[in-house]
Image 1: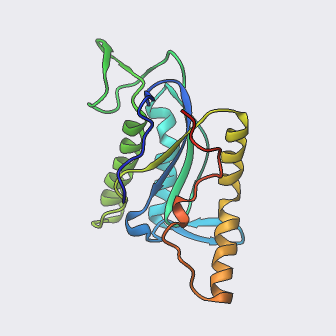
Image 2 (image 1 turned 90 degrees about the vertical axis):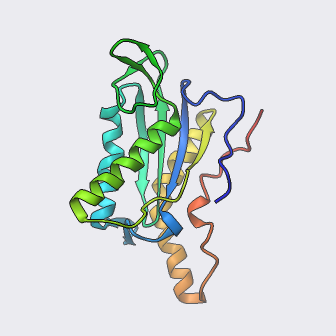
Length: 191
């Protein structure tokens, strides 16, 4: 995977809304399958779903919007709220006063989500293989139109997945190496 392409001028702990995609290692379909336009979770997929939802309780300074766990990736919208303090969740966070922790960087939120899935899958399923592809993809959502596009993309993702699978069955294999990387068709990055 190529190196992370973060905006150089952006403070990823500052208030904002972020579209996040985390992919399974080698984009293996280990989180479940799609049938009838809905995702049917594997045992690992259930853990991924629960870990994503648990982020809201771990960090009081974030708000989770729509998300979807797909067979080989996860899309979610994370909002970092302004002027809030979070519960201590990871030792890499910057302290603002004794006992209180500033809202973490987006990378810390995603890293703790992936670590939670990895830890729980080892305990509950005896999972020993790598689960996650290194790093993750993100996009800063700048306005209501981009937010709406991202929400729609997440909601329609299982239907698109199923339609692509049906196309493969009818026409033969297609290049699937970038399917999980095709995030919402949001506007181009602006300086």
